[in-house]
Image (cartoon, rainbow, N blue to C red; front, side):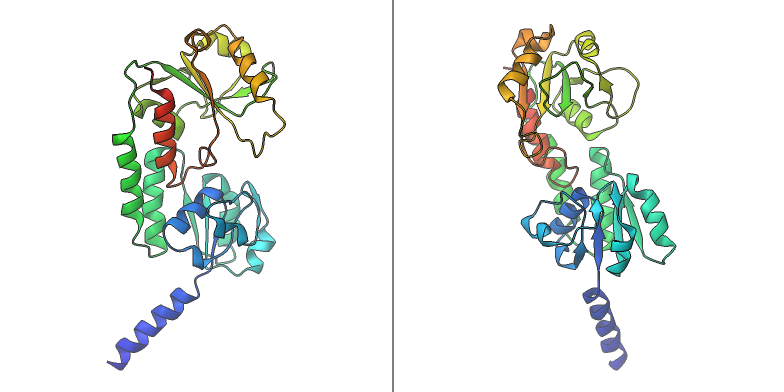
Length: 270
């Protein structure tokens, strides 16, 4: 009996001493959703959700975290994404436990939530992954399937390069889940860069622009939207160019369930 008590005490002490660092806003959101936010000791820049995350120390940008700051916090686990692999490999040299998550597609996100939950002993994974699956099932589907282009960011000058959603990325998954097709059909990266001539050549039936007032506050929204409508595309003729501004759209976390529902509503032709 005494041995069992000692084992249980050791487990409680170990869990109490968990010190988790997240290297991206998406991972921060997932950790809090898994009910382990109280174990976090730091996170990356732009980790704004939930509000409790904003009180955590910052260890740098999610693409260039500061190794010294991470080491000074003596973490028991550092969780990053695939683009953080260089940093995670360096931390392994200091015998720090790490976990790499792939958050590129919807299935990647669901698998990563389960993987992270197992790593930090959370029982919330099934609830989160089910919510994502259910959002795909219940989201409105297009009655008139069409070619959709999703644009990252709103700018007034369309002569400069425009970033769009390409292949093997959760935005394309959402386009397909909503019953449509990705207007971008070339074989390229997940985030192709197009000129306005390329956009005209692709000729999408609908254009959805992901805008953030927080980071693009200087943009004249009315003028920028008009410039898009001035391009000779089916989207312009259809009157189907719109701006969507939600703070969760770019974040591949459990909140992708909200993104699926929001963008499916936007893509539904009457």
